[in-house]
Image 1 (cartoon, rainbow, N blue to C red):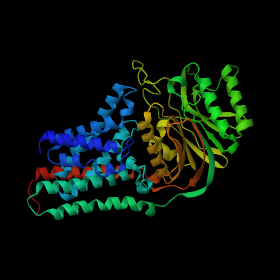
Image 2: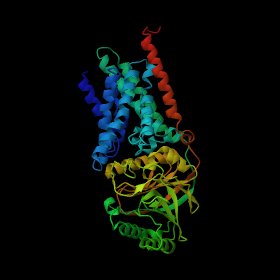
Image 3: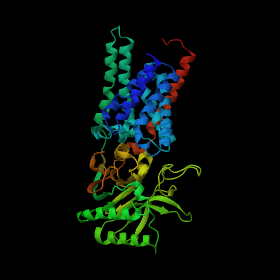
Image 4: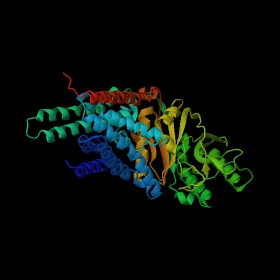
Length: 497
């Protein structure tokens, strides 16, 4: 097999893997997509393996993150290259392992999930594209996430890819011999992870349900450029209020508006904005008669022109309180990493906040996540500790259809990992609700819309929540032992008896 053919197979793997995610969302490709790359990296040393991984990674992330290119072409290219670097590292390790004994070859999926985890840690929590997220459309196959999170799902998927790659390799290498029993053994090995995924729904304990809360999810689908224009405040207040008026008669327990639904701080008494704030508080108290959770910028005391990306609670008693301040900000979108660098998206300069405890509404404890927060498993687990429902407010208008769907699929896995329902208000994104098993209760793809959904409340915790770093730590330990073993074998090439 020539180097060019190997690189072409790796590019094919990257393209197939990207197609497992929205859109088109051909999730079943996740079981086989990386097999061509594994066949390729097993036919050379570490350097060709890294090159193969780099090619597959560049194609994968270039297609997966294509929604970022219209926002910032250079940012898209830089992020693609950075993310592909970790696939290159995985390719180098897989190349070494595939040329080792059987017990070392079995660690190929472990090497893959270890690099996925490292990519999330070294990319400010950006775990977009971890293979386990591809199973979001089929929650019946994703329940093991309550045991080991997305890494456990990725481990199962890469195990099927490895089994297929070993079967193909056996057929190619020994075509003239009767080795079909090796092929069948390798293919049968894929049955184990597939069976584990399928059995997860029966084997993994479910949540303890304690009633429900009626949530009105509002998505006004406002153009993100218009929101930050001079008339943006009037536009945002008018559209969100009109949509909420349309469902007020259905008596929701909670009203949820998206991230920065009101694009300016509400703390401005005596000004025209202060008048709008009081008008909103009166509307909540007299017409809607349900508390409103709304995304707003919150001014940082003593720091002019600096804000928190926050969520405010407007109570039926006519009081407004900031209940959550976003901790994990998006560089170039919410803040400028260095004064010499420009901003990609319009809006105020944000600084990290300190999060916030759960908010009690109609007997339910609501934990809040803002936009990028739900991409970080640890943040969702922390919010779920003292909450029985999670509320996600986000502005997915920048992401396009593919990015918005991918972001929603991430929320599906957060629901399974935490065993908490998620109510989701996404400007021009997927708004609705997800139950603790990852089933979509209601969804509107783009808006404008106002949905009233009975969202199940749940208590208890999951094995994953108790030890979220257990599987990555075990993977890193096994990798260290495998690399030491391979190093010793190179020093002492004598065959074992």
